[in-house]
Length: 347
Image (cartoon, rainbow, N blue to C red):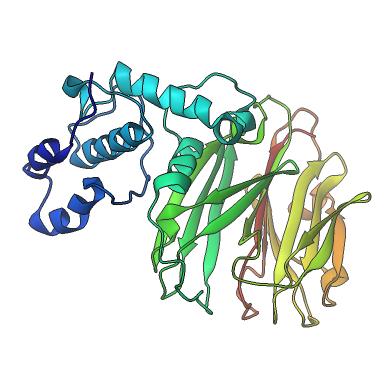
């Protein structure tokens, strides 16, 4: 087998009906020598390459694997076959600390999922010029966070008017942090919905267990500075950025036998006259106030009894809970960095 040029394959691809001339202009540089690639597509053995976008993603993956020194047979270029599977597996094992360790794995799977894409992006992904000025007005958000037996799903958005060189997010699941670079949220006015299995956090789904997820934006202070300390438990703290102006934050939520427990914080620099939250438990919602979080820099942990939501505690029943701060946009927050938390569990 030999390393080959993908130029002829690209010409065939761009001749497919699904690619208009306008698309050719933006896509063709992705497979030329010395160019960069954005890895947005999950891929696995037998990927449906009748879809032009999927075929292009396979070609870009194969070119990257060839750059890494792996060989793929000429006859397999443009399809995700056994040779590509072996190359992906070797790539994952080469970078096992980043790709496999979070899953407690030592052997690659050969599937290009979110974590493998992140490693590919870190090594070969497109980035803006390092000298570019960091935007001063950032409007990132995380919405539609949900949990089910397969893992965590969330929608990440850049609601601003500027493209970003990085869209950094963190999801904390049951106290375990994982950071993500969401490529699909780097463009202005764009959103990207991603799903991550529990193994991303080194966890496995178990019936009857409680899983609580909180999303944070810009966890490593790329775009902002300053800090407050927010308690996660009586013995643990987490240092989080302080935002000039208004910032209402939910740090955790979990169903307990006594009710719904949540930690909420005023992480801004302004005292509040109210701290409104919308709490939904198994479809029953209430908008509540949290006086303990009125003062700037203050956090409080509250427990709402199930009767607050017209419910009573039932053993062995699964509770689906979400908490959203400032649900009616009473406050013009500097940024809604971590305004939603969800939890699913059987207390």
